[in-house]
Length: 406
Ligand SMILES: *[C@@H]1O[C@H](CO)[C@@H](O)[C@H](O)[C@H]1NC(C)=O
Ligand SMILES: *[C@@H]1O[C@H](CO)[C@@H](O)[C@H](O)[C@H]1NC(C)=O
Ligand SMILES: *[C@@H]1O[C@H](CO)[C@@H](O)[C@H](O)[C@H]1NC(C)=O
Ligand SMILES: CC(=O)N[C@H]1CO[C@H](CO)[C@@H](O)[C@@H]1O
Image 1 (cartoon, rainbow, N blue to C red):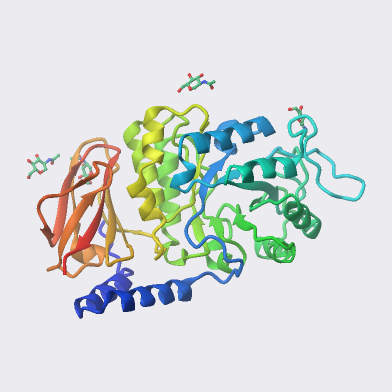
Image 2: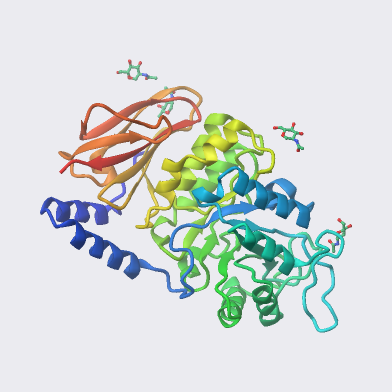
């Protein structure tokens, strides 16, 4: 099966404009207005690039404590991951007591969060990081161990703002049958009134195609069910998320779920594919392992600055799968500066040569490019015209940024 994308025309247009040698400053102005025009409708100013950070769920599940959160914040700083952009420290499910207080407000678990969430926020902020929290657009959260926010949206939004929370992941369990399009916007309005900008992450699992309505409701929306620690789960999340590529934009991102890198279940090469596809898909980069105890390999993958730069490119256009031949795939998406990012993925069990053709990836066929290999940290000596072919090992990928030479 062969599919081609013609959705990279923005880039072609920019290249054509570029060939008419528009000055750099005019280009920059165009760039800013393009980004502004594409900004999502949720007007909280957040998420101009995909959020980066860490979340407790994929490794700790319900065994989350204020000690784990503090130590994970410390680890983001001592490893230098914070300087690479990993700023959000997000508490997932199981942080609260089972019952609200007499006035109906949420209370942190007195055993596991004895200092309270506000003290934790102060600590995390003192490290130059941001604190995220979790609730649910239903009667209970998914663990069924704490209350959901349905019917208490204003109280909870006010509580989160008073606690100096910066990010809310909002799950979809025990939802009483009301449509997500009815339940999620109630929290959006509550957050907008709460007096503090809070990144709003819709964890609706992709049930009702949140990409189609999410940009006025949240800063990101899950397009898939939960990821698990294996190749099949990872690539299927990538595929489901890719369908909605054209809906991603500054302020509102498709979310194929958090990273499993460092949690076992995948080889080194598979984890590189995981990080490469998440990066080029402009997915939130939320680390899901124990950052206090990472292997060298895990750290090397999640700290690749060149791959992170693709994810954080200010143009904010999600890559698409522009060609599939059997189990060989070419993913491509435009970047600022007329550049194109590509990932060549081999999903089979044998090595293969995979070719990215310029007319698939949105470059005029005669364009000469300089190719940078983002995992080998090497610029190819030879300039390329028309296509790039590389051998790709099984369950592995190659990732490049192509920069046209004018
Ligand atoms: C609060 O934390 C304690 C200690 O981990 C745990 O036993 C208890 O179940 C937690 N409460 C809730 C409601 O999860
Ligand atoms: C750290 O990670 C290794 C595996 O990479 C594991 O064997 C060890 O138990 C972990 N240590 C702690 C304290 O979690
Ligand atoms: C890839 O192409 C090169 C050059 O044509 C060839 O030598 C090599 O055997 C090919 N590798 C695979 C796995 O097909
Ligand atoms: C040579 C081989 O079998 N490797 C696979 C990697 O992906 C390509 C593209 O489908 C397949 O042709 C190869 O089968």
